[in-house]
Image: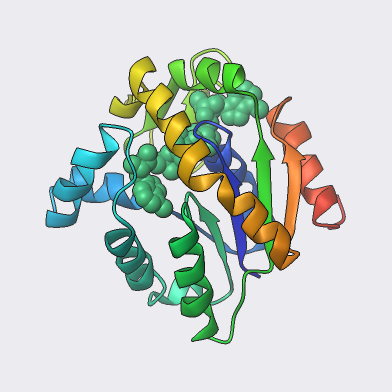
Length: 216
Ligand code: AP5
Ligand code: MG
C-alpha cells in the first residue's frame, strides 16, 4: 500500500506518520526529514536545500524528485510507503506517479489533514524535534516523556530554524500557493480522503483508521 499524507506545515503529518507506519506495515518517508539529515551530514544536497528551507521556500522540484527516486531504490520500501511532505507540487505528484508505475505500483490513498492556520501557528511555535530520530514533540501539547524508539532521554530535542513565526507565515503562503492545488489534483484521481487534523493525537489517528476502513 502506498499512502500520501498531505497537509500544511504543522498539520501533524510527522506525528500521525509515526502512529500509522506500524499499523499499516509500511515505511515512513518524509522529504523534510531527508533534507534535514543531509543538512546535519553537511552533504552537497543539504547545503543546497538549507538555503531554501531556512527561507520557508520549496527546494526545486528536480532536486527533490531525484532525492525521492534514490530513496525508492532501498529495499525497506518494497511493502509500501507512507509519504510525508512529498509530493508538494503538481510536477512532483506527476513524477511520483511515473516512478511508482515503474514498480507496478500506484498511489492508493491520499490523506488530507485539514487544520486551521491559528492552530498551525500554535503548534509550530511550541514544537521540539529529536535530532536523532526526527520525532516531533510539543512543549505543551505533546511533551517528551520517553523516546518511542527507546534511543534517548530527550537530550537531542531542538527547535527547527524554520519554525520562527516569520518563516512559518512564509511556509503557509507557499503551501496555499504551491501545495493546496494537489487537493483538487488527487480529488480528480478519486483517491483523496479529507480528515480533520484537529483534536487529540489519538482521535485523529482513529479518524484516519476509520477513513481507511481498517478495523480499530
Ligand atoms: P517538512 O519537514 O515537511 O515541513 P512541513 O510540511 O512544513 O511540515 P512540518 O514537519 O512542519 O509539520 P507536520 O505536518 O509534520 O507536523 P508535526 O507532526 O511535526 O518540510 C520542511 C521544508 O523542507 C519545507 O518548508 C521545504 O523547504 C522543504 N521540503 C520538504 N519537502 C519538500 C518537497 N516535497 N518539495 C520541496 N521542498 C520540500 O506537528 C507539529 C507540532 O504540532 C508538533 O509540535 C506536534 O507535537 C504538535 N501536534 C501534532 N498533532 C497535534 C495535535 N493533534 N494536537 C496538538 N498538537 C499537535
Ligand atoms: Mg513533519
